[in-house]
View 1 (tube, rainbow, N blue to C red):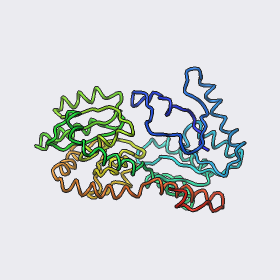
View 2 (view 1 turned 45 degrees about the horizontal axis):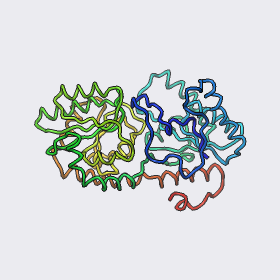
View 3 (view 1 turned 120 degrees about the vertical axis):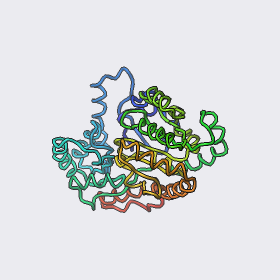
View 4 (view 1 turned 45 degrees about the vertical axis):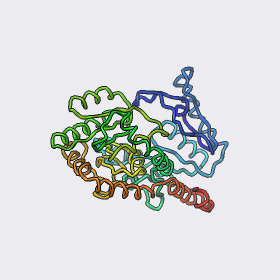
Length: 371
């Protein structure tokens, strides 16, 4: 049974960072039982939403579950679920995106240390999404024997199939989005907000142009900075196409047009766009402040990393890639091979192993459950 805090992802809730209402176009609720604790309607005031969210305690009491898997520790629903698990003596599995790649004030670190060390003593198993996340738990005293790998992943098979379907129409798509076909295309996918630092990517392509290496920019996504970034690209004489937000079924159509993906964020808990691009055989370039960089980006093998904000270094790395088609192809194939180990199957196997620890029972054949 899955309990959701609200139904925003299926009713078209406004995403403040994308700046538009989002309704995902792949099924989110099929194949399992679920309940929404509250609905995103205007008649629900804050106190009613809080009351309905607190109902999770009653659900846990009546359900008498073998375990509860809580996503994140920093939301009202998560803390109420912790309380409900404590009251009902239900073992807790925790999965978060947290890492320590971003520096924080000493007082914040001190307070987090006090709170998290206590909270983690009430947690029975920890589901880690990658190396940086694992190191986060180790820092706060979690025993490695209670950690289980549940790698962050996307539907690799679906993306690969979609990519093959869209390759024949690649030239048409490039023409439709207004980019020249005779130069490499660098793609960014994500929200257009400050911490993503898309302006750094524009600056790096501008530097490449001054050095005689022409490249185009494809921006997939939307957000409050779209107009500003469009103007920055125009002022820098960077040929760019902003295609807006693209839903899951449309992503591959644009990814197959690109030669390399760049995620220039100054802070990112993981960065699933790296998974998406690698599943479609693209080399990737990202910053050392992106959580997935520790797991997915092997320098000169699947891609490259650099310090966020260093536009000159980003330009240098991109220059090597756009100037060498064989290098791009080699890194792209290695990226595709690397991401094959980041799948739902591995994720499910980690969850089952954690359940076996906290319940003391053999669940079932992992190969059967994870299909």
